[in-house]
Length: 308
Image 1 (spheres, rainbow, N blue to C red):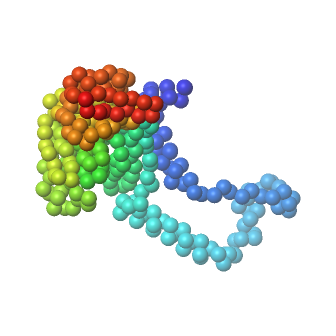
Image 2 (image 1 turned 90 degrees about the vertical axis):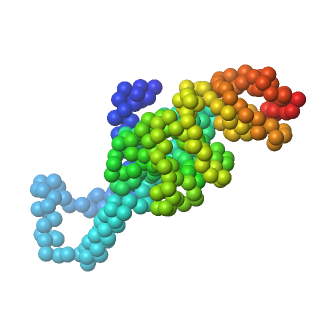
Image 3 (image 1 turned 30 degrees about the vertical axis):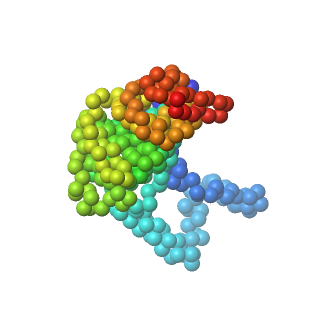
């Protein structure tokens, strides 16, 4: 489509469109104006021969309608509320971005930051004058953050909170854990349902080439042996490095045409290393049969990994 080609020619087009979209959403509740009825038009005596200001002057020069003071007070109140919103940085409009199962999609935010969303992913974006906040409700996302020292860029995913100024990192939110991997720059990772000043002070920066797993049992820090392990999904490769099958299936199922599960919880503890192509998940399942004592059973609705 011409529209998509235009957006691809220059990132500034996408940034401008995203800003227009946010304004449109913020003012979407304004009702449509009412138009003058035909009878009112017939009663209108203005013939256009003089400026409207002169035509109205004799009627309104020395009369102040009773409702003017109330309207002025209401206007000042609106301005005060708007100023408070800008200064305090609260109640910013929320923009929802999401993808369907099997679909990756790239977005450009109003600050120029770029992000890629993995399949079956949903985020909530809230930007204001003092902060840039992202809530990763589900799925996986890769962020290339535009530098803005006055507005920290924070991604919240379950019990993990990732703060950066200008860097590249990925966040994968699973059912019971969050994995953060830094490709460039560094971020600060805190954990807890509501990170406080003390937890933030205790958090150590996560630098390029490092990743951390945040789970209910605590944080586990590790090194990225290969960048593709963290961001290969953007090119259709789901890479895993000594990860339990239960967690691997959480990622694979976002791209699978049928849900895949194990019939025995103990199979979820099998440690998987390798790469699954989202375009050939059947081949990946066959490789599991060659490596582990399992067999794949498929019906019209479901795929089950069973003990052999």
